[in-house]
Image 1: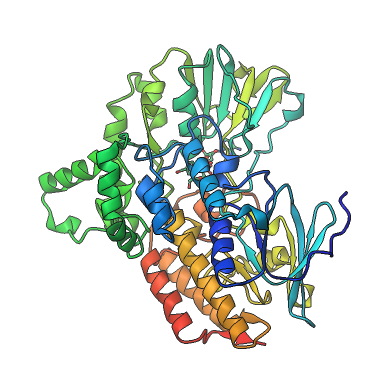
Image 2 (image 1 turned 45 degrees about the horizontal axis):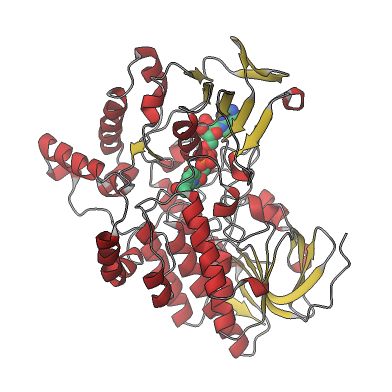
Length: 539
Ligand code: N01
């Protein structure tokens, strides 16, 4: 245990997490002259891009939209090598940013925060780490990431398994060699798909344990040559403007053309055009009505199923790979490269867990209802306790010693604008539930927007001589009602996924992310700041 370190001078702001959001939060607060420290559990920066170094990890947002906008120098210096960069490139980018802006001097690595307590007498937070250090700060910013607490299924006998076990969200830094190995993978979400298509040709045998098939769509990922890089740099001001004014924070939006107004041929032509873009544009842009109109959703879902059918040779296998009981786009759409063709390989076996549930691990593999699958290694691509997991893992105590974990258990998730929680003054959250950033937004767009807003709010509070800021219970409830009203008008709550919290036993069921649009949300946040935070109480 490290000694308690109250020797660190009192801070203005403590930021938890040195990923994409935490780095930018540090930069912004420092620019405003505040004394800031970032605590980070990893040994390096990059958050998601530090932990998720699994084979095939790659960004599903285009490089030109997945970056910081605050520095012209940075935009001109950094050169993306391809449209959808792989994990090492994004990790390098975030390290470059940390070095360029000398951020590391205010980051303490290898530090797990275990508790945060708000003291009502001096309006400050005391943060305690797992090794017993304490820090105090007026403000606390949780930049802990929306998808950073991995979930492991509760499968009997896991400890008996003699092979190697990995979770994609905690992948080792050392290269793992699966050559000639019998590998099993549990999970076929965006992560599982990337792993499967990357290792299928390397392993001796791959067993894919699938519970729910996905509407994955092909990624078109050209290399960026010097000409393309120059074009993008020229267009950056326009792209920046665009991402800040679209529904999902990408450089495309819902079209104005209505499904109803088109003939079948026109509808198909439109879908093919968006399909051929090879990006998530097909999800958002082809027909925005898919999120609320079952008939449109059915039409698009069938289009995507037809594309899957074209690529898999075995009729039984393709039936298992076709999503049938939920609509396209109502859970995260993964991008893929050669994923469906993997199932034509003789060394790949698809296990449909609906027909053949896992019973237990054995010493040498996985036992399902139909028999044992012998494995040398198992990969859990089973996802995360999204949105809430990284926050409830810490004992966060607000006014009257109320634990955030308990607050969210009793009443469900509540968060004003997804930024603050009533009863927890001076605490801000980035990418938290009930904001678009929790799921329906290109992460850098929404996280930078939230960081900017938080930085301005902290500065305002201090400049006005206030010691704390907290949203009222009424404002928080109003936001929750508005959130639910919009969520329930979509088809998304009908589908099981981490969007709804159904992947974690006992988690309150509620659509995690705000579906009013990242653009609308930003305008609302800006209005609140312009009107001097009318829904908050200052002390
Ligand atoms: O996690 P998931 P993920 N038995 O929750 C299965 C982002 N991301 O890590 O669908 C058997 O989506 C589960 O089955 P089911 C992106 O936002 C971004 O793949 O619940 N299976 C599912 O197949 C994404 O949405 C990028 O029936 C079990 C899988 O595990 C988010 O991260 C790349 C099981 C989990 O899928 C999370 O994706 C990758 C059990 N007990 C990911 N428990 C980029 O763009 C779970 N599963 C960079």
